[in-house]
Image (cartoon, rainbow, N blue to C red; front, side):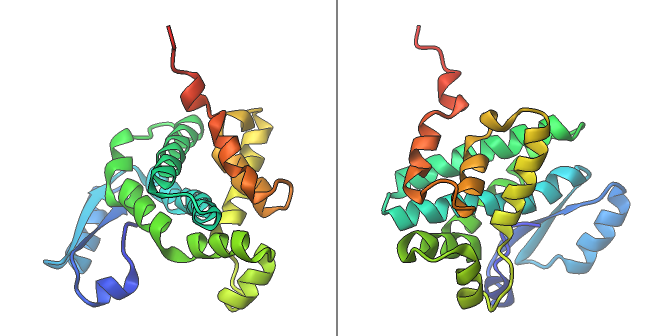
Length: 206
């Protein structure tokens, strides 16, 4: 997992990737098999975090697409990326014991998140969702040849897990992406949902 856009890897442009392996010896076998001087690999044993980052980044990228479609700038997108990363960390820590915060600093974490929020299909389709007024399903047919977009489906799964524990309000970005993609909220309400983020309200003004 990592910030590994396929055509850039094929062009041998320098990048990093992360292998998650419970047995680090097995991970190092894979590292030896795939690593080159331009494709550098780090092996970690925090498998759950590596896999969850690969899924949750797509939800945050949908939020980045909404921001682009609504015409906000880089400051707003940076805020979405930061808040999204905080929700990714919080979710993983709540549901999976043994999560290591440093894993989020590997390529599978923050690096892949940044790349996906500035490119990738989730960002592009969700930008078009805002600007075209078409449904996600229709855009999947037009832009992805009918393939399913990962972000909305992952957001649905995340909200299902969170709602069973009454934790939805602690994850307003994940919740907003799910509800906007579902048509429960208008896309132009996305930023309003972030203005009440617990990351802000937890800060004392005293």
